[in-house]
Image (tube, rainbow, N blue to C red; front, side):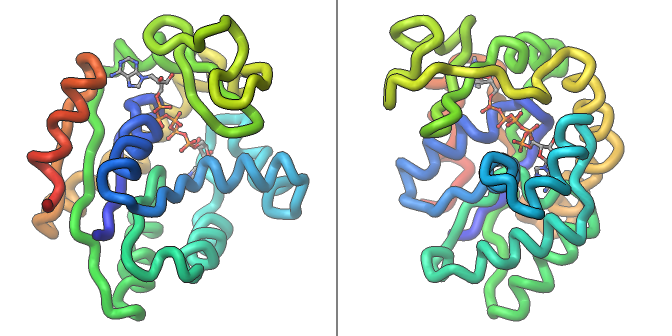
Length: 214
Ligand code: AP5
């Protein structure tokens, strides 16, 4: 199965992706995580991307598509994948379609994770992440067992630099202008599905079986 996850910053794409990975055994590829790894390792891609990410802007399409194409070339993507945070522009969607055509595949589902804007500020300002293993928590809704410490690897949890209020607002504006048009794009292809993540996670996860092929 080949799935792309859409939705505004903080709608819960990463959280839903972890569940889909568990249920369907798909390889989870988050372009945000790929960029953050490059930044941690101080690679040339990381150095270039950091400037955009810290401002809450999108990284240029050319760099993003190149990085993603390299990742999709790996053997673990041959039988399917789950893209989280890609595509984010119409040009990226066209580039993905071209890559898929080249390999003779097509997307099965574009899954939109929807949450009202008013909930997003609280979810993102309360988010804490483990810089070592990538586990995600929320001080309001999904706290770690010991405050500030990762349950999985016991590292100290941190706040993402782009989770500051002003940057979150800018990311939401960017989403509305550059990414929301993808909903129509995939609707026209007949593969858009939506789940509502405004309730608790059990209610969100229950919707997955209705919208993803069995
Ligand atoms: P990326 O890392 O993809 O960030 P994002 O899209 O802004 O999404 P987030 O990771 O912030 O949120 P999410 O939707 O995954 O929510 P989460 O599950 O964590 O990208 C970062 C940056 O990289 C971009 O701004 C851009 O600069 C660059 N970039 C990445 N891809 C790019 C691309 N394709 N092109 C160009 N640039 C690109 O949930 C949020 C919080 O809510 C968590 O604390 C979670 O625990 C909590 N939560 C989730 N669901 C619930 C629930 N039901 N109830 C209560 N709490 C919940």
